[in-house]
Image (cartoon, rainbow, N blue to C red; front, top):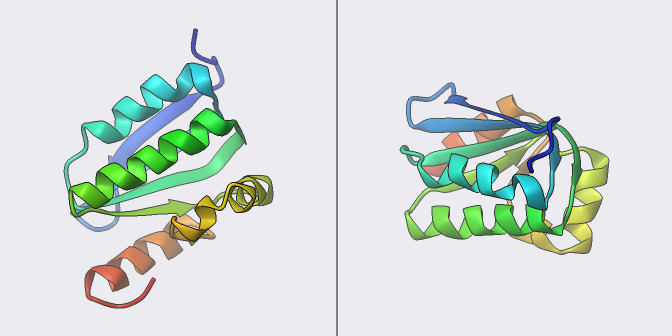
Length: 123
């Protein structure tokens, strides 16, 4: 049974080709199927996971983000993570996925960074 505090909000970003997946609550094993479904059906060429309201993430949540990254790369999409708390950033550092993901302090910075990257710049 999924955690009742877990919520997803999938919405367009500032750019027409960007989708934002805002997550609230805990990303844990029980919520991963719903989390995965949110990014598997996306259109567009840029995806931002807004984790600013995530309170906890376990290893299955990290695994799901890695799967999202691989799926985006295989489809030629750009992916970024925005607003991860210090706690989540430490978890990503411990698991070394911070070397794979583009991490931004907030949604505005992520959208700007992906826009720059899309034009050939470095995020």
